[in-house]
Amino acid sequence: MATQITPAMPMKLHHVYGHYLSEQQAKCLLENKHSYLEGDRSPLLIVPSACPEADTVKAMQLASRNSALPGSKVSNSALDDVIVYTREELICLSSEMIVVEGSEVRLPSKPEC
Image (cartoon, rainbow, N blue to C red):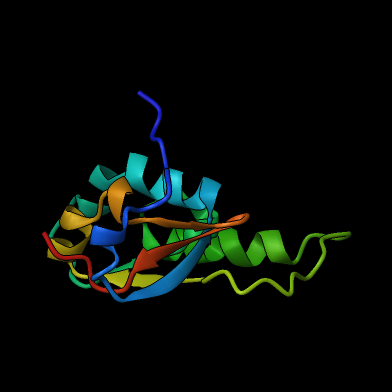
């Protein structure tokens, strides 16, 4: 089932929003939460541009390799390169907490259940 991201309702805006991702990255993160939660790591370092790669070292390598490709453009985007959540925060993260702002979405810094 595909993850739907819709604008958050005002009652959900009690979260502090500090992570900026593309809509595609946010969907990937939500659809692959289980992969990031495997093992016992905490906090979880997530590289959105390498999603669905959950292994931090592999994800960092993928992200750096993709940014060094000939002809690749450096983005002036404010999208986060790395986000950090505790296991509990990632478990609580849901699509209802995401705020859509044009082509970018905001995720809460510390999601609460």
